Length: 194
Image (tube, rainbow, N blue to C red):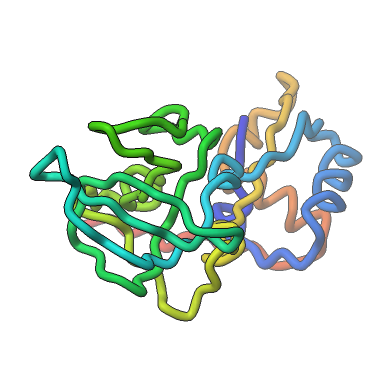
């Protein structure tokens, strides 16, 4: 059973460190198998600043972008055209593994070097918009890891539930257990019949 911290906070206020909470849950009889971050796959994605955009010499629907990634400029071939120079964009660097795209590698596209990928919301798993590059706030610093720049963090607690704890086979059941451990109030959803 997996429960994210964001789900739990819908039902209860949590002011403990996630590791302390996991230890308390284990001591209460809900064995915690592990804690992972829902956005850990984005660690290879950084904020980039578009420095230059020019047409690809060998393809009508592609453009060549020079992007400042904090540690220098990278050449990236891109098919989207919704960005302009100085825009902040997410850049998946070589070695990044995106769930919807696969592994990002440096290579040559139609004879031009591409050292990464500019990403849409859908490619990053942060929304459904796949129509163009995800334009980020202009205040973000090039080279910043995307998860920290966008404050993306959602720890997921994985439990190994025993047969005597069917009450914790749902988020509200786990939230009820957290409320009992921390002495806080459980907020149940309003449910009405029509």
